[in-house]
Length: 155
Image (cartoon, rainbow, N blue to C red; front, side, top):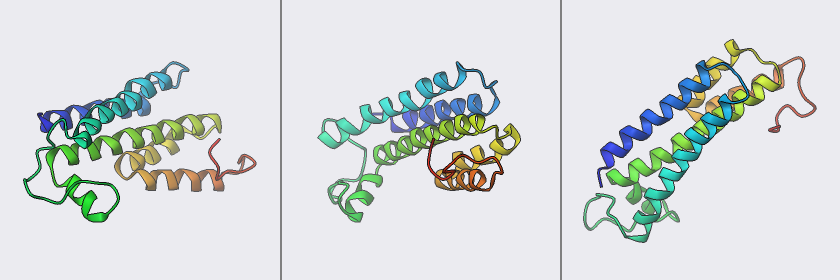
């Protein structure tokens, strides 16, 4: 399996989703397209890669003789990421979830009338360091004068 190609295509696909989310007009059709064409397709790619690797149907390209890859110990997770396939699969996981969180932030910020100028840096931080972008957005919502009943909970 060409893990380098899959890695590059997933990166490009996610970047297109982020660009659409940040730059496209906020019409009703835009966010569902970014959601289905971005996060959902990345999730499908993730599933189509991790299932055959974990089942042993395809190789992750890692070194022979390393500890078994599993998700129940640090050593097992390190073994999973110690391969081109494991690193690619892990990266696709991040891409799919960070884009999903970015979509939620953009929709929620629009619903709460938070300007695109304030959204832009938060979306950038969500792209580059997902949980920091989410934290910044939740803090912004908490500080916003016209906050919802519970600004910290997703709505």
